Image 1: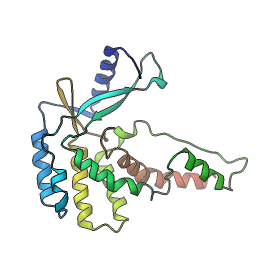
Image 2: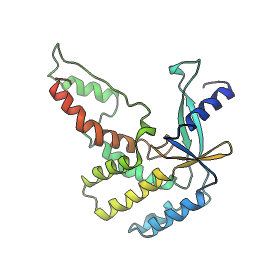
Image 3: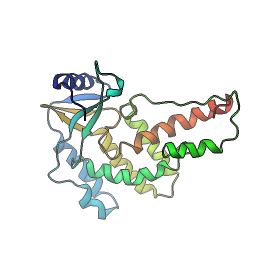
Image 4: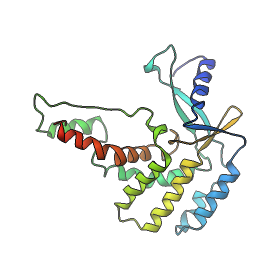
Length: 232
C-alpha cells in the first residue's frame, strides 16, 4: 500500500492528461454514440451467439487513475496510467479479443513466459562466447505508444497466419478498432478520449501491444542486428 499526498497524485494525473498525443478532452459523454457504432458491427456479424454478450446494457463509465511508481523516486513519483473499464461499454469486446489474441502470443518467436522460462532457454544456448554481448531492452510507455492503425495492422497479420476464416478476422478487426479508437474515460468532471495506444485496464491491453511491438518492430530489426553482431 502506498500513501501519498492527494494533490501530488492529482498533479501527476493532470500532467499526463495534458499530453495531446495520447489524450484528447471531450465535451460530453460519448457512450450513446459508441453504442450506435457497436450494434451495427455486431448485428452484421456471423457470430450470432456472442451478440447478447457483446452488447452491454447499463454500462459503467470508465474512470482514470494512476498507480505510483515508487521505485522511480519519491520526490516526484510518476504514475502508471490505468483506466478502470470493468463493465464498461467496450469491456465485452475487449474480453472476447483477449481470449482470442492471448494464446497467439506464444506463437511469436521472441515469446518468453517468465523468468523461469528465460533461464531454461539461456541454458540451452551453446553459442555464448567470451565476446558475446547479452542484451536486454525495455519499451518506454509501451501501452500508450502503439499507434492504433499499426496495432490493428499487426494484429491482422498475426491472425492471418492462423487458419481463421477471413470473415471472422474482419469482424474481430472491427471490434479491435472500436476498442482502440473509442476508448474514453472520465477524470473528475471531464471526459477524455485516448487517441493513441491502449489503456492498462482493458482486457485487450496485454496482448495487443506485444503483437504490435514484436510483429512490426522486433521481429524485423532485432534478429538482423543479433545475427550481424553475434548477439544472443
